[in-house]
Image (cartoon, rainbow, N blue to C red):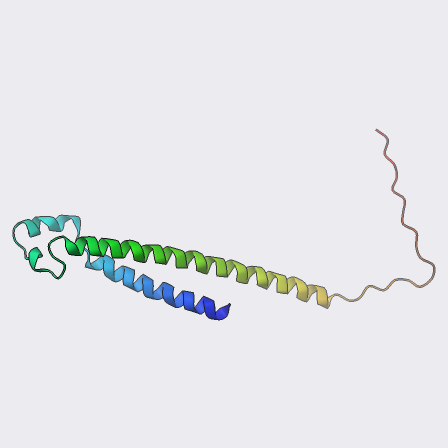
Length: 117
């Protein structure tokens, strides 16, 4: 479980850094006016609109992976917390002294008084 936790954490960190980079590469809403006056948008690697759709799609994919790794890490944390609590309970039970019963004849169970309505 520890190895899987470390792998998911590494993927989560790489995806988070990539997501930040892709978001910073995107143009803001106000940048379209510069492209309208010939700011060189047609000379880009992906074409005039190709980079916007590519970056938007990449952002969506990275955000989905980030969301899934976040849920997976939250699940691992919950499982780890439950296991830790179970180990503490078992440790407390093993530290209890053994119960000694008095020697002699066995005791009768006490009768429960009947309550009349």
